[in-house]
Amino acid sequence: MEEKQSGVEHRLDDPAEWVDQYGDFLYRFALTRVKEPFLAEDLVQETFLAALGARKNFQGRSAVRTWLIAILKHKIVDFIRKRVRELSSDKVEAISDAAAGNAVDSAFTEKGGWRTRPARWSVNPMEIYRQKEFMDVLYRCLGELP
Image (cartoon, rainbow, N blue to C red):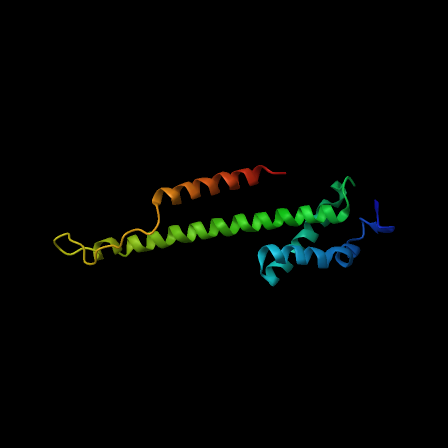
């Protein structure tokens, strides 16, 4: 399997050439999206590993660079989904820990009055709910993308 691009031949079956030809571009692409150099390096390495495992399925309908970018995009989306899930579970754990520590009981006096009156909300709870609904739909749609 060979690909011609700008008069230069690239061999799909030589992964060492992938790193030389596309490594810097893929790294810059990942870095602009995740903003963390070590994370960008890891995502590019995972991309090359995934491409190595899937190269027999490459049908040549696109350039090798385009194929590698598509794999990298999927790796980035997977990473973002994982990070969102971890942040969500951390919030749930924090709420559970606060409840376990009787945080609610410490907000009231023995007679049931407030120790310190809560401040007025600076955000609209309905708007927060709508944003969460939107994000749920967005991530569901992203999960359906090829």
